[in-house]
Amino acid sequence: MRIESVTPFILHVPVTGATIADSTHTVSHWGVVGARVDVEGGLSGYGYTGTHAHLASDQLIARCIATCMAPLLIGEDARDIAALWPRIARHPALQWVGRAGLTTLAHAAIDVALWDLSAKAAQQPLWKLLGGQMRERVRAYNTDIGWLSLSDEALLRGAAGAVDQGFTGIKIKVGSSLERDLKRLNAVRKAIGGEVTLAVDGNGKWDLPTCKRFCHAARDLDLYWFEEPLWYDDVKGHAQLARATSIPIALGEQLYTTDAFAEFFAQHAVHWVQPDVTRMAGITEVLRVCEMAHALHLPVAPHAGDMSQVHVQLAYSQAAIAVLEYIPWIKDCFIEPADVVDGWFKLPQQPGAGTTPTPAALRQFGKAIG
Ligand SMILES: [Mg+2]
Image (tube, rainbow, N blue to C red; front, side):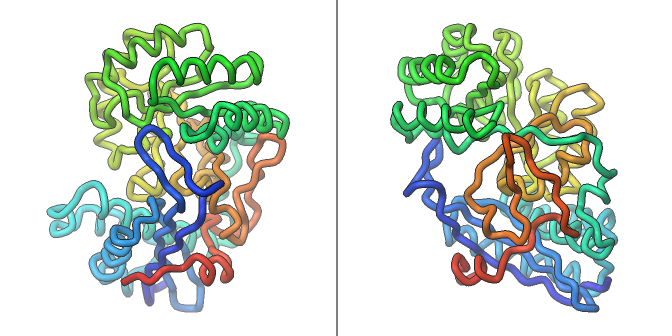
């Protein structure tokens, strides 16, 4: 499986409605910035990272794939994933310009493409290569009904609709004002009843005093977790909040390395662990976080920068993963969409990592790589 070429691509895919917003981000499209890795014999592997569809920065990632990382791969055996990972991640010049951020996102696309290739070569869905099916089914929770930009009426309608569709978990964005957020959460809890898991996500907006006030006021809502309550890198703050509230703390979508997760573990600052294959340097690094979390008996709920196309493969095979995020924006761009039926993710059937885009998606949503 000698690697012959590595070709970047960029897709900008519309989100549900015109735009969505949480406390920190407003987006109209989701960026799928990827790599196609071709090997001798005609097989192609696909991987991608997820972005805000900001073309200028997407083009930087694409350029990093094409000009910094591709030369490290050409001529190598695509199945040597364990050796190729440090070849990129520990490359002295690339480390100098970034051990996190753009380089990690570009590396994610490549690492996922290599896993996709290995699974395709084995003619197996990726979960088979990652240890096989270890749970009967994977529970989905719906984030796409909970945006901060939705009106109160639309939020309630969406939450009730998700429950009608069979979802047993939803997530609501917070981070506007305590009064507005609590009013909405109380109304949602009333609408969905006590059986459905209700998580909240602050996207790092609030400070510690505000988070403490929120947690105190929300203590009777049976919140499943409070995600990214504080600034992403504030280990001590999260540890303090974790000690101060009974609401479980979730985080990890903005962490790029196992070292970053290790800090939060060491300080007992996280209860729900949320790595993302598109943020970290791919599947290889997320598997390490899953093992670390599992050893500490902490559940993993991956953040879906991939919109769960790849994470569903991990969720079916990794013991630590307890639940998986569902946002449907880009699923129809792929040959085998990560679909949910009655609130549960379908078991992928096709060979590969679930990352092969359809020719129509490449045509319709493709952008110039610059
Ligand atoms: Mg989040």
